[in-house]
Image (cartoon, rainbow, N blue to C red):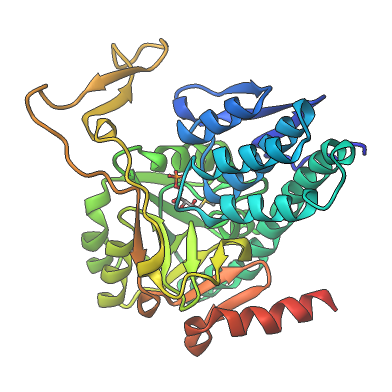
Length: 370
Ligand code: MRU
């Protein structure tokens, strides 16, 4: 099958029978790409967060299976590749759903047909995700347009957390997709990106919006409640890593505190995610596995030394060696009760519908197939 053209902001692409990804570890200091040529390299790229963001790691994992099938398309190799990739990161369900879907597609096939089928399937997941981000942009845009209509004399101010932009997907992003749509329509914007300690994914958000010409400011994670109290934020828009059947949302650590503060200050709190992020097997947020990462992520940070140099970024120690960093959960759960709406590629989920996503999906999936 011919490799279809990729969307303009592509973070992943096939070059022959290899996969090239944007290496996110040194963003926004350095823009570099790495070539993945076998299954183990794909697993390592996901674990080390060279590639990150829920939708993107799902698609990358599917390409990992294709690389494994290239070497050995046997049942045993297929099973081993699925096990290895499933162990890379536990919380983002897109990874596990992508593995489940590719497994269901390949298992019934004779081994000699699996390699070709795996590449085609991974490509189709990539395009599906790219299309979903476009639709999320369309469904989220009215929220921003309404704020603009309410306050025409000033920019619409949107707070986002972590990075849920094009860097984290195969298209234009999830939380940032409505922002890109609004910017393209000429709506004046002010985006506030919280830094997102410890890995500082907020810097990636600030970088990608700056490159796109969208006004953006970085703030400390702890500034949110103060900014909300001063009426400086019109909307909060975040992505998601797994959404339970009752509408509870797992997203980057620090998301829940923003939702609680938004409720107190009566600011809409919106989650933007493709329906591949919904896990109907998770009854509520308490059943979602939360990844705990190394305390080293708290102890070290990437920076330039000296600060204004153009050198390669260095890892610097933030605490003296005898002070110990503790638990480092990568995600938290925002209860559905604190979410104003979830914006998906099939439409917006709000009100009573938020408490039963199985019911909502069954009606919206069937109407989208018609
Ligand atoms: O640990 P990360 O950087 O992979 O976490 C990413 C997030 O929490 C994002 O908000 C989420 O995956 C949505 S990305 C479109």
